[in-house]
Amino acid sequence: MCGIIGFTGLDDAKEALIDGLQSLEYRGYDSAGISFFEGSSDKIDTIKTVGKVSCLADKVEEEGNMETTCGIGHTRWATHGGVTEVNSHPHTAGRVTLIHNGIIENYGELAEELAKEGIKPVSQTDSEIAAMVINYYYDGNPVEAIKNATKRFEGAYGFCIMFKEYPGEIYAIRNGSPLVATHYDGGSVIASDVVALIKYSKDYFVLQEQQIARLTKTDITIQDMDGREIDPEYLHVSWDIAAARKGGYDYFMLKEIHEQPEALQKTIMPRIKDGMPYLLDDGIDDDVFKNCNRVVIAGCGTAMHAGLVGKNMMEKLTRIPVSVEIASEYRYADPIIDDKTLFMCISQSGETADTIAALRLAKEKGAKTISVVNVKGSSIARESDYVLYTHAGPEIAVASTKAYSVQLSCMYLLAFRMAAARKSLVDDEIKELVKLLKKTITDVTKLLKYDSQIENISTMLHKASNLFFIGRGLDYALSCEGSIKLKEISYIHSEAYAAGELKHGTISLITDNVPVIALATQDNVYGKMISNVQEVRSRGASVILITNAGVSVDPALCDHQIMLPKMDDRFAPFGAAIILQYIAYYTAVGRGLNVDQPRNLAKSVTVE
Ligand code: M6R
Image (cartoon, rainbow, N blue to C red; front, side, top):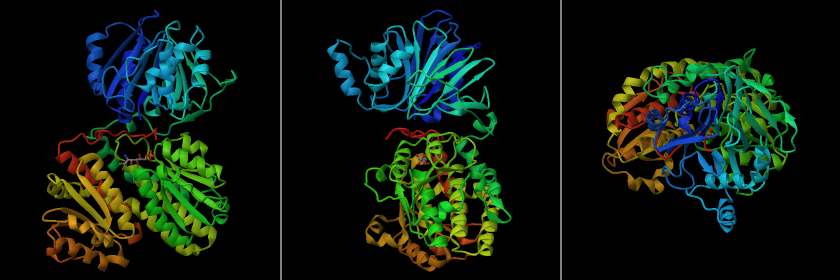
């Protein structure tokens, strides 16, 4: 959710903070602010504003002509308290100034205690209460104040804190919310995401839960709650700064759509050996698949939709029962899990609070856990028994595109390896599937050239207020993904429906010119699907029909037909995903919206 950064070093901290916040803005963009030590003095200045980081940059330009080499910055996704300047971070209480990512769940109770001592907040935020509690325990020793205060906090937090008596120093602690840091020649930097560090170094470490970091311009020291010094384990990022920039595209989303062939190549190819799926380099051996009698896949939003495709493939190829669970529901559902359950979770960020909680529950109940994660060293990756990293590089746009495609590819690889381990298919059959999976990389490349065709077709959606995505089987799973993509960035209400289910209620919403995006790529249900399209058509719907290559339909059936390149229908999701991403993108652009930063949303949902 919120983006946080701390910088202490030789250079201008204001510039470093604004630059860092710009790269973190996808995590929240309700308001932004910075605090910094003036020169080498103990005077802390704060500049904050409602709105985007660009508004903050303007304000800093106007007001912030003082020199500084140490400060903290925050870009907010509001949880507690409205979007106002007073609720923006940083928050100061006495001699403590902090930024916070997460939620202090017991802040009400803490506020009451403070009120009894006559200490009252000025904002409506849980974060200011946190600052007040830390200040309450602060008697000149920052580490002791942090330890005593955090013992009182329930909930998730990543804090960067400055103490008035310690110019040039930043203290940080996390519980749940991510923090990564690096030290380089010019100083020390800490942030909620590695995209803000890459400018300084490709080597970084993840601050672990309940560790306290102290950053100065000469080094970073870390200790645990018992005062033991910790040597952090440095990780290396394989992509460079260009990957986290727009690189000439209008939006990150468009750039990321175009990065899919490369992301698929990097995710699939190292996992193929002698024509067979090979997961041993990821530490996943066949026993994991042999020893389970069911699979549970959990995730949120798009990641969960990748799971729907995974279920379809795994059940078809292995005959093992697979269920797909919405992580936020799963954790409270008292689910049936045992040591024969193979629990898979999917997450781009690896920091989604609900998915982490579902994973922890599955582990606690004895399941073996595999995660499909994009961010190295993230919480989900660290806490799973096995990790299959997707190699999409940084995904900045809130709408997930390339991460979805590579998640699909991992679902297929897992399904293939599981079929090999359990011998539900013979090797030749699996090799054939592997070839088809490799072929998706070229098919997706071809589909990227559909941009102008889909841009034209999407004009019919610009004025829509409601629309439907329908499909059967894998196409239903893709409909769910098409629908979330469209609504999150275009603000058009849409629903995904299993095409056969329409007649059981929803078809009453189909009237003249209601757009229906119908996916008919699955051979075994093609005839049935066309009948469903006819049903909506005869009630006046405007139809965009997505089919396999070479399928000719009665021109009266739809307004537009979009044909995939020639693809085996089991692999059609890779193609349909690109079409649906383009439909969402061009519809949102056509409506004049900021595609990368849709209202109310944030990229990484680290609160429940
Ligand atoms: O980081 P995660 O993959 O765990 O995130 C899960 C969802 O929040 C995410 O996929 C969300 O649905 C996307 N914004 C959809 O485009």
